[in-house]
Length: 263
Image (tube, rainbow, N blue to C red; front, side, top):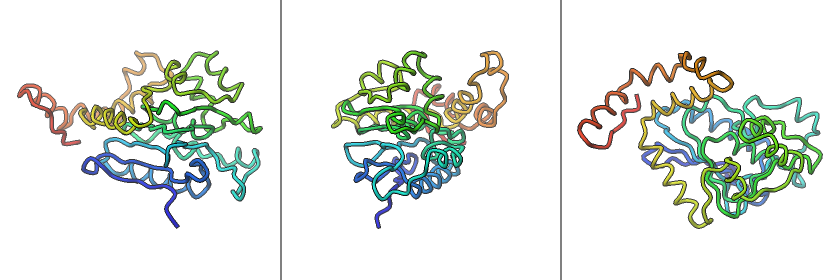
């Protein structure tokens, strides 16, 4: 049987592309898929050579439509699902706080329910113009329990968030862009090109700096700027005294692109 999640290394092994490969159910996530995703995120966290991650769904119809509720899927009641919530959220990603490299969502179609929660767990979101987003759980008598409510409330004004949450409607990519939840919308045939362009920009930066920035952004949430300024985080302490920091200065002085040691 074909693997239903695959992880491919590119850019000399520096970029991981994680693909949910269940197009027959619009890349909905079942228990086995969740377990494989959890393994992949843990593997990527432990590999310091990884500098960026792209997550997407197979095909052109869906990023992911959330939990697999298709006929034949092992379904849990709402109470059972709530009792067994993963602390890392849907797909072990939507609430994950330990993946310190940039994560790009390549949204190639529907991102609904838990699929949208996974998108909300990413740092950069690039969407095809035909993509549709939504926290659609209320339409099937469920609730966005894997961070959807709170992630959305953090990122957009109250009325915008509630307009999505209290209708469960599917929202076009252009509207998500206007809300500030999507970085760029492009025609479907240019989606790979756009993601690669963003990856090029990410890879131009020091991996040590980016790890520090992600830890700072996460740990500083909810603090005043002064309180956050006082934080002494592991990745920050590593970055300010790193070979990357020295290489960045040398490259600037020598008027050449830096070659990041990543340490």
